[in-house]
Image (cartoon, rainbow over all chains, first blue to last red; front, side, top):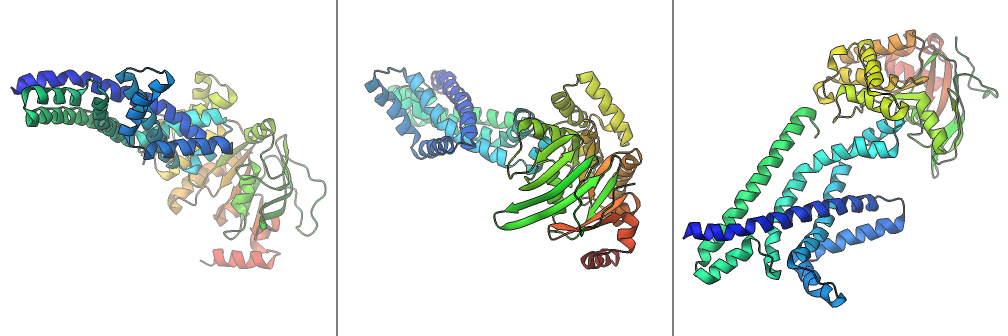
Length: 215
Length: 263
């Protein structure tokens, strides 16, 4: 029984990973733009970025998914369930990633920027070669933690019909009446994926730390 | 060797490698620096001493615009800037930073880059040097500061004294005309500080024009040509090192020297 359940529910692993990874990457890129905008010299751009970050974070993820999947068709925008899930989670991830980047940037001592200025490095070089690599290394553990959080949130995509792990678990529970076992199997799959992500990020983090000793 | 002048009458026509006239800085009503004048010849070493809060570091950091002065003029090695409370145009700013090299109290090496990369990156980005050129310069300078075997190390693996010597090499790699030292040994144990002071002494002997904010009175007296004493955001006095140390003219200088030398 267990092996049958496992093989059915494991069919969802692909989409769980896909939705999570795509949203993390797209959100991560938009987050970069956001953190840049939040530090813009132009006040209106700063305000818009800050407002976006704050609004996005206070609306529950499931509300975002429903808003996009059930709301956007009213503007003649028909999305597949997977597209809707990725858009929704990307929006959410962008705001959280922007905050993670911000704290990474704040952790870089002023002296780094000052040394770069004193050497005559351009702003582009300073940001690209000095500030960003250090901020990224500081932010890495937080990014991994957020990635695992997003992995768990991706279960919400089952509510709009994305065939990921929780979706299949629900289907199995209905068909086999093995509710407990179905969701235990789903839970185990999430545990395995999370552990793998955590292990990899920890390994990378330790390597960087040992090498360069950034705080 | 140096141009010497008193503090009573501000000099009208100054000349030299470094010419600073009427430099001042205010934050709103708070005045942190006022009417600082300084002229230095090429190859001259001037130490800036004085109690904390005197404006020594602020003055030094105004010279390469890490702090923005609100009034006065700066001419260093052919770069000219008239202060106006904001950053100058990009060409002037680049020029000013190109002719000055700075060494910080906290070293500020880039921790994610190796020693070699710390020294080559600025050369490649600022001077447009090739990788080979930049590495050749770096190797020569690493020898000069006595750390030829540390090229591949990351800064976190080095002692404070070693990091500061690398920081000096990094600044020298851009061939500045004037080196600015902002309390280069204050973060180091006295013993470790000596190795940094030795490098600075060599640099002075080789004819580098140097402006050094320091609490090292021996260095100020023995290595620098002149000492500038600052207090309360202004210049208390400036003169040949031996004279300032043994016969200070200003009462506040006398108090300060007594306090530091009597320890």
